[in-house]
Image 1: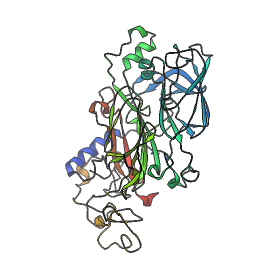
Image 2 (image 1 turned 90 degrees about the vertical axis):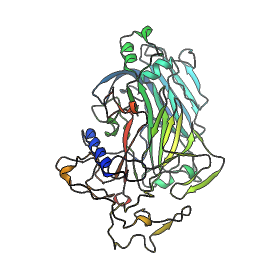
Image 3 (image 1 turned 135 degrees about the vertical axis):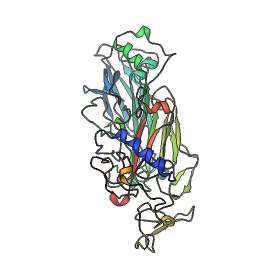
Length: 466
């Protein structure tokens, strides 16, 4: 299904399902989501970082509160997950850690050769003891680009569960010439310094889960009673938030320890880089509606033996890349994928152009997909085979409908139709909204309350509204 509602792959569903999905969206209507996200991921930049391990609380989408341990930027509030560290390839990185927790703690960074100095000896690495004074510094050279995880290497079965996790992003040195990361030149962005990993937008999907019984025991200092053989999470997170909080703007005041949101926004034919991290202890089948993604990297390694062009919509991709609509995200693993929505095979004009429309899909405005031989308009990006095709059904009378928060009042891209007072409002540019979520049904709840958990919405907007 496609349109301004939940998505289901590429083809329209019956109107009955359309209405059911619109009704379900009402459950998400809470405060208006004003900002979908940035083209680049938010985080700390530089070569030297000072982190403090400390405790605090997070909120869940069902109104609950959970005691956590996490990393803080210096003396700032603890946050979950820890600050995203964004560094440049080739730089020497220093991360200094101090513990204000009741236990010693540490940091491990899979994928790099790390040297630890200071602190006290630990099982996997040197640790910051629980004295609030002694620090340990972890140093490494960011010798390759990609998406990486950092987490506690001390009692990880407890401390990772408690929240001591975060992401590291290493930007590549160049793509023939130095890359300029700004919103004016998106075509120069690249995840790995090559054309196959170029992108227009990037988003982080750091996936975790929690069993609040463990957190309650830790808050009371009853560590001897904590067991893992009966581990039973009831909360599932993207970037430290459960749905529908994932779609709130970043840095809302009522989520002070959960600053990062996850609300992907793209445009027709744009390339979205998804940086996905399995930061918890369980696997999560993360499912994207609307189109397949191409997984181009795993654990910071580009999946290539060379590069080939698969389709014109996707562009040049590594020849070992995997095309899929569900990413089985494993604990401790990182994945980079490219997602592109094209509208191919939609079967109707996504803009609702009436018969006789001129200036679109005419000489001078057409590009040809060399793989399929299909033409598309270079301005609207719609496939010409669907241009001026009518919407395949008649929508019922408004009085017979329930409207979701992301419905624009029109089934057409970039077109806002009339809505009853108080309805809609979370899709100001009238994009097509698709639900992205875990494919484990229980993970779409907050302590058995639906909707919630590991879910968010992705919106595709018209290139004419940018």
